[in-house]
Image 1: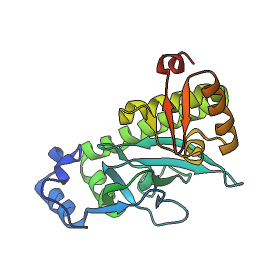
Image 2 (image 1 turned 180 degrees about the vertical axis):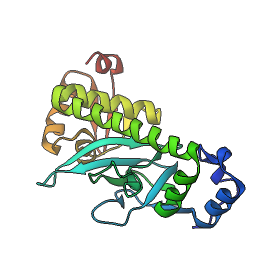
Image 3 (image 1 turned 90 degrees about the vertical axis):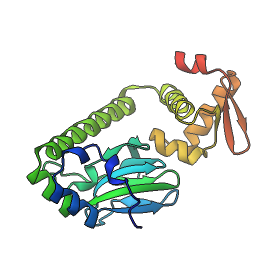
Length: 220
């Protein structure tokens, strides 16, 4: 997909680049669109490079040997990720997956180009390590939640996060999608939502969940 005028200026490090580095990006950066559920990175695919979300929502997760997905973090518009450029950062020695949660557009700086920028521009290298540190912090938070927090609290937290992200009390997600994002099983999600509904916290509708008492959900 061709680059639109002014698109590269959205990159946080654009103003620090030299004329030659900007020319390199103009020649090599690309925009790709992804449909909901489509795999963006992982599963033995090529080292993608640095990604920057232009629109939509991206989920990062790891897979267990049994095929269970554990969600690490999500990326919205204006956020970037360098874990998909693991071949550039030698310290990253585990595989993460990225998939589109919604219809998504990504600005992608190919791994080879991103490597050249980090080698020649200190500000880009600092950006890379700041992003890596931020994402690893999110990973640690996800692991703490999974290991030490009861599921009702994790589910309440996710529902409130969706409410704040979309501005709507109507959460239009399947139980399967919620299970993926809370690193649980669909059956567990269904049981807990029924309990929330019995307690008057949510209302279960066909194809959606309506948040009734957000204050009570926050108390969890």
